[in-house]
Amino acid sequence: MELEILIVQTGSTYPEVVNAAGDYDRWFLTALNAKNLVVTVVDSLVDQLPEPGLFDAMILTGSSCSATEMNPLLDAFCEWIRRLADADVPTLGVCFGHQIMAKAFGGCVQRHAMGRQFGTVVVTATDAGRRDFLFNDLDETFDVHSCHEDVCTQLPENATLLARSPKTINQSFAIGEFLRAVQFHPEASTSIISQLHDSLVARGQLARREPGFQSAAAESIGKRILANFIQFAMQTRHHAH
Image (tube, rainbow, N blue to C red; front, side, top):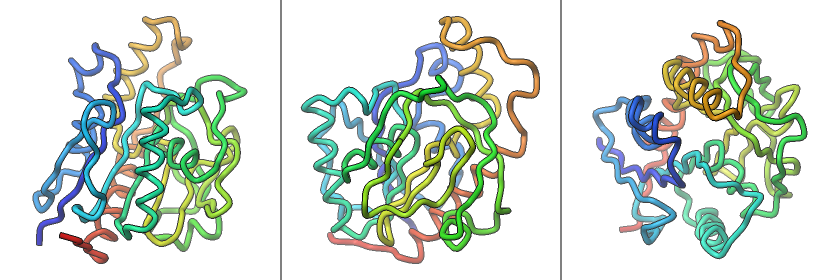
């Protein structure tokens, strides 16, 4: 059974990282590594966004854009995201995708008071998170790859907190049965995080980290989270066409 999945690319990473490891969509395609997926990629900054009901699942990627700097294009994107709540299509927002989903439903996104969060972060699932399909087969605390400057400081009223970390209280949330969001990067491999590290250091946006700033376990845990999402989408396979 094939699953039709839409990857909404919400921007591009740094050109040198694209050259070495591909762009956000490629990170997901590599991490998902599922032969039973039919994947369509659209650019939310360029392409017209399709009707949500045309796909079995959707992923909203990270971005170099900031959800703290809204513009008419992002306002329209938020309106499209709000329609997802009525479409009953499993949707996963990642990093910027997490933040813009929070913003779309009335949450608050700001620059992180402690600056850029980068490298391995230890995340703790809440009671709701431990019961949620997204974190099936994971321990209560687990390593994830992180790279973000903005943070959701207040969840939407209709959101349920699924995971937190000491420096980022809202690491993951759910809205209803079908919408999920994570601040961290389950799609990022260890090599991608290394590429991002070198790029950010070269750009003067990050102090060079000592070896060991990333956990090898975070890559496999990220793949497990993505696999859980795809499994849920398979189980709730939805078509409106």
